[in-house]
Length: 75
Image (cartoon, rainbow, N blue to C red; front, top):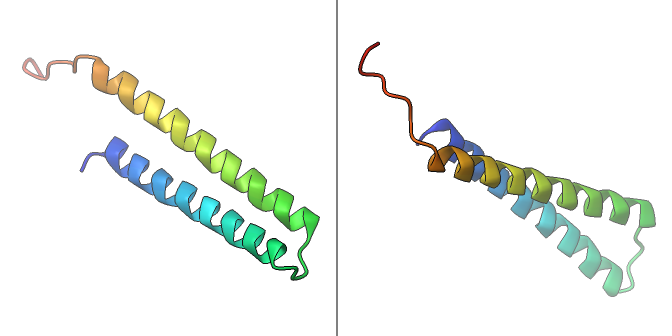
C-alpha cells in the first residue's frame, strides 16, 4: 500500500470514528440523559474537521493519480 492510500485509509477511519462518537452522543441526548451542549459542539466540530481532511486528501489523491508519474528511467 502506498503512502497516499495509507493516509486515505487512516483518515477514513478517523472520520468514521468521529461520526460514530457524535451519533452516540446524539442518541444519548435523545434518551433524555444528561448531555452538554459544549460537548455536542466539540463532537460536531471534530466530525466536520475530520470529514474535511478526508475530502481534501481524496481530492489530492485523485489529482496525483490523474497526473502521469515522472519517469525514473534516467536516474
